View 1 (cartoon, rainbow, N blue to C red):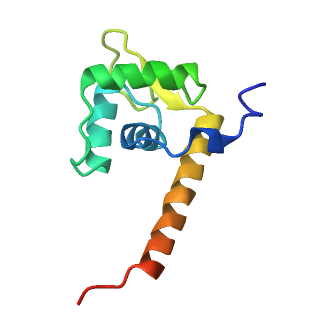
View 2 (cartoon, one colour; view 1 turned 30 degrees about the vertical axis):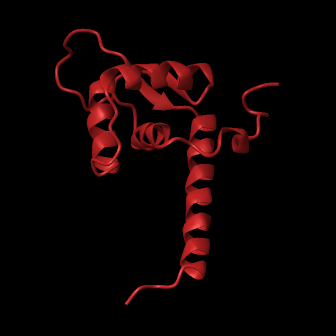
Length: 118
C-alpha cells in the first residue's frame, strides 16, 4: 500500500500536538524552533509542546509520510549554520484538511445540540 493510497481517515482524529504541528507547517517550511513558536501561537498557549516532544513528533510524522525535510525558505537572511527545515507533504496536507473538516462538522453538530446559555 502506498502512502497516496492510504485513507486519510486512518490518521483521524489528530492529537492537539500533531494538529498544531501540521497546521504550523501548512504556512510553509519551518525550522523546528520556529515551528514551536508557531504552534504556541496557533494553540493560543493551551497546548504545551516541548523541544523533545516536537522532535519525537517530527520523527513520527516523517515516518508516516505526513511531513518531509525541505530546503530553507528563500526569504531567509544570510546563511548561518546548517539547519533542518520541514514541510507538509501533499498527503500530510490532505490529512490536515480532513481533520479541519472533521472539527468543523463536530462544531456544527455541537452548536445544534447544545442550548446556548443566556
